[in-house]
Figure 1: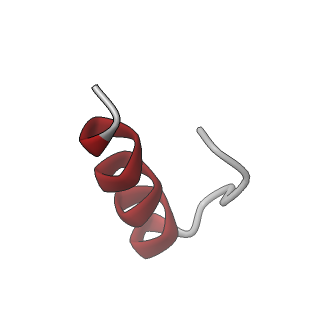
Figure 2: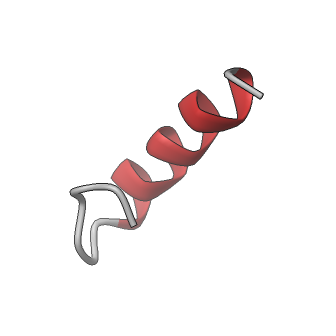
Length: 22
């Protein structure tokens, strides 16, 4: 997911940014 690998905090930030674009 994204380019964060197992970095959960980074994944959550990536998800939030992605959801804002919906």
